[in-house]
Length: 517
Image (cartoon, rainbow, N blue to C red; front, side, top):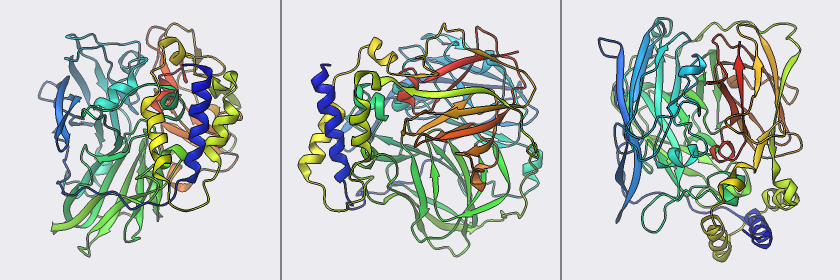
């Protein structure tokens, strides 16, 4: 890529500031919301599945090459219980290496499934996972460096549900697919031949993946027929980069009952909820009236994330409470969380997310392109949309050397053989995560723990972010201070990762590794 083409690319992004409201996108036909099949350990405590290549029809006249876990796209919902020891019997039937990362599960580094544990085509991996943490909605996905983003785009993702006796006693909605509804929200962009667009070029590496088709459980604008009564929504932002600002189409309240790592102390009533890439929230919705409504996302994020249809409210799915009355309840009290220390420990680790494009003189142009002109409303000229689309889809792929040098943590782009740092095992630690003067969103994920957010930009976190978390979003030159603890070891040959969960940032160097001893 020549310097001129980079400059032209970044200047063209500035035209996105003119984006204005457009009609809500919706498909002409409605499909039922697919519910992932539940998969529990067998009598021997084993869950067996594979990763495979396939095809699926997303577009009316084209088939799309896909990856999936035990199917063509996405995967089953693995269900385990606190206190169980579960062996995963995983076979890689893909034409390329992959890994299997248990996002949010608190386990030792050698079974965490990071980039140091690749599974070659045709090989098996049999980690044993001791589940010892509160009930939560977690997930699993590949973590192969530097092609995690491409493998997730093709379809590799699935839910990992941790159940517990304590949560069972709360009588929350628990009938899978009836009043306990899993929602994996993603965006995709298709090429003219039906394949997913997945080029790692300068635009995707800097801004993250910008799909123009919203999918929920792999379907565009589906319908979910649920029980009447209280309905529980387990929401995963499974997108590579996109954030969503969720609300109900009829403005009914959403009650947040859980975050990444488990239930909150009490329900938190909200009218809208922002969820970033990799995050999970559990919501309760009052459907006792039987009236249908849509889950809607409002425009959110940087200018390039507001390309149509995401420059206006987008209806993601319809919930129709038409089945028999449910018995689930919304309790006043959900869980008991450990009290935060009155005097947290001193900061022991700083993690600064870096975007090295500034070295090429591109930071001022990119900042201008991402911030200018967002307030004015008005129609978007078709030629502007077409030009920006050509920019996203037409820029050439970066060389591996260019890709791996774009981003970093603490001034260094990630490499597999870098020493990293060491964190103490079994002690409370205070980490500070920041981004210097960068203003882009970075949802920072830390392996091997569930942490508590102490401060976001010097203030306590919002109530629905005050529980167990494994992703801390930072933006607008922000800072997040975290109380973390690592109960398990992670050796130098299988360290934990800390990285931005915008997968294109992760795959271009915004990741570091650490041991625990």
